[in-house]
Length: 259
Image (cartoon, rainbow, N blue to C red; front, top):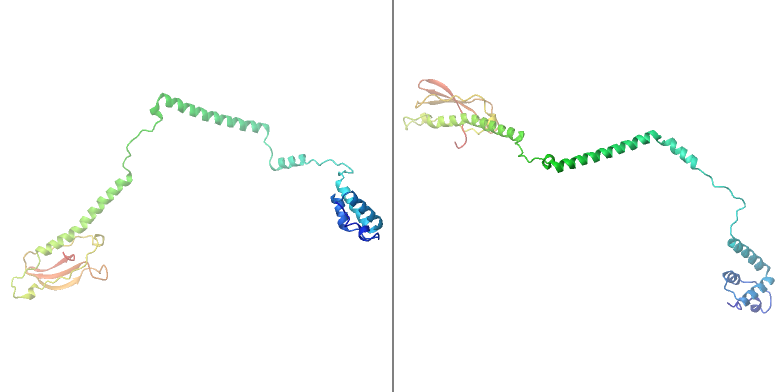
């Protein structure tokens, strides 16, 4: 690379000029040819400031290229002993006897497992049915038996609770007050209010007393409630006091809507 355009002497017509920084950088980058180097050195002789800057740059570059040499060699510190001591303090190593005991236990466990597997294999080869689960029908569980018993008791209780209702309805359908004289409507005014049906569990335990009079003339005297209403819509039990030819008697009835 020619440095004629950077030559301070040629550009100044032989007069002393300052050496440009680009020329010094080109020298250290290796871009100057022989003529450029001569022009640089000639300019440095006439420019003390550039010569000092060039010398410092040369020293830094040579120092960077020179291998590093230590003035004194110090041995690297060895912390192996302190590290092992700290490990032993935090988690001590097992003694040799304990290590042998652990190894023997592992060996015994492995040997036992192998013996069990070998014995099962031998038995399987000798008698295959001995290690097979027999297929047996599953027995009825206790839950099914209890459910069946509870269902039977429930149906029996419902039937016993509905028996008085059926008997009372049949009694009033067959033995109700008869009217001997159709022209006298007062004697046939046996109008009983229809009560709403209640569940069997709400009925009293005692059986209603059925009327014992048959084909007897009865004149309704009064109607009173036998017990407090089960709900607000009406009572489930009605007591009727009637007068018969043999004297007054009390009849407790249960009426089902539509029955």
